[in-house]
Length: 270
Image (cartoon, rainbow, N blue to C red):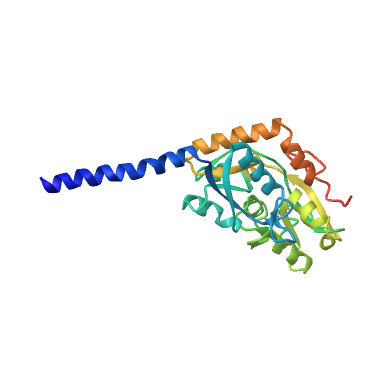
């Protein structure tokens, strides 16, 4: 009987201790850990002061403010984003991740928050034809596990596809002459390379790439499949900042065109 009484007292005490904690979790700000890249200008990069900057970063902060959430931005390599999400190390990914059918088998996505096509970049005056035959035997650089990696691998089967962890490293090897060209997002190429001193002498070549099979339906925010409430909150926040002018203010800070609609910058310096 004494043992039974002790068990009852212990259980009751445990419940008393747990209730305030649960109430605090429900009543306080929602805490969200967001995976960001920090090496993909102008969407995400490190400023001279060592702080995260870029379109993705500003969008993340705006959405968190709209949702009244306490967010922590955690920097990591792009190819580790989905594994970290599934391992519950982060709760969402805001890293220019395209919404594709392949990725949707593993994670849930918000609505898109921007959409831009891919492009091929090579030296100015290059006579390369951006076709499977024209790029046969050529070295093409891509960022690993991206839509551009998958597209180049499938579209240019006779080319050597060279994969890199960071997009900046792709551009560096192009400058060094180790690559014949690169497949990359049009905005990342224009803003992060062609309009910089390092991009002098390089330009877009060939058509814009936008096949939904590879490029999906825009960049969205990835969450775990079970986190439909978070997805819905993000969708509502995206709609809100699109309506109240916050999105346009952020967009105009980085771009001189509508990045939400599918469009491509010229890549030329202003």
